[in-house]
Image 1 (cartoon, rainbow over the protein chains, first blue to last red):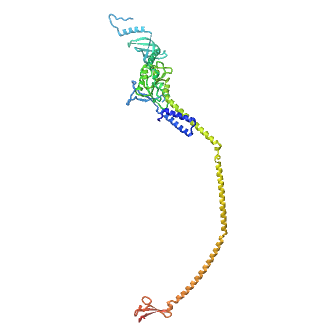
Image 2 (tube, rainbow over the protein chains, first blue to last red):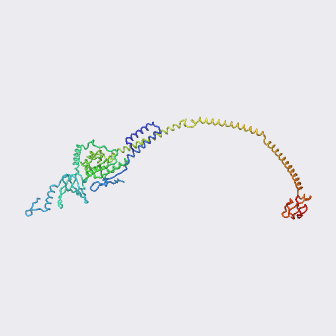
Image 3 (cartoon, rainbow over the protein chains, first blue to last red):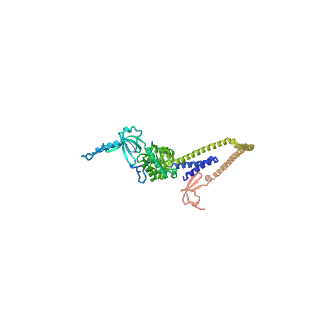
Length: 83
Length: 451
């Protein structure tokens, strides 16, 4: 989606207002419903596109980060309580 | 007791000196109150506790025996600022001295508060708490860095909130000690590491509630320094809501609790999620109410008399159709009657012609003709028969046998029975047969004379 959140939200508000006015033909209303639904789905997807990842940095005995071959700190999945 | 080297022996034994020191020190410092920070604390399996009491310039060994320890309301731990009431003892066997601790007063708090105030004033003057220099938090942080203990409640509280509030998130924990020796260095270093490797776009630095001593790592200048110089915006969440630390003042946002820190980090995302959920809810409500409304309107129409029955609209057409049908039937009946009349007339005409009589007449005629024909035929037959008889008698008259009886004869060549018709057909002395009407003769040609 190239639409920014601001633009998307402005469009959503606009659609809601239009539909709420009750002046639209049913066909037009349904078309707008569809458009609004699409925007909501896309925005929600964009907001939660990150997969849930919980990592912990690994350290050696001296408390220094362990750096991998790519020069990045090594991590492992963090075991959350109860999981 | 004074120790004087004897005239004969110009030296002391170790034991003599040690005992002299022991006596001097133990008498002089039989009851002392000493203030310092606890470090290297070790509790032996015997239940006795050994630690070092130190300040910036010096340190002294302390021992807290089990019996005394049991009477304390709270046991010391590393980093605690305490005042011990103790007596100095010299342990001759090792040649060292130590404080034999009787009671402990945790009155280091005053000292800590003093240091806290000093640092706070110092950093305030530097402008480190200036609201103008606080950085805005990223709206949609992709990676949340957390600096806290991996085993404490803080990380769990943060995760609980994040899992509840947002669908997907990426969190990296930099595990550190949050109290005791080395805690402040680890915390400062962890913040620096997040920056050095650009691992996160928002940081939460926190620990749970505790005494002022517990929280003191977050009041150290080294930690304040790391927070101030972090390029990544930092939310602090240290202790309870009522506890304020230097770290809280320097951080970009101070959260009252770790859970609140997580809420703040994701508040924009959560706000968007809420907004979208709300939009969807409103949209669906509108859709349903619109559908209900349209349904009601439709029902309204169908209940109008004009639409309640099809006859209202189609009645006149139906009537017209009925009329047309009746007309059609009438016309057809009429036409049929005319045709029927015509048919009857033709039938009558036909009857009046009496064809069977005609046929009878013709039949008789035919019969008559047949009779005539038969008669004619038999007459003809008779006539022909008579003629035939006459002809046969004529023919009989012409039979050569009949001629022979009247003096004629027939001459045959002997050899081939052929009829001799000419005198030239025979030779001299030729044998010939002669046929008469009642017999046959054989003769020899005696003389030939042509005519």
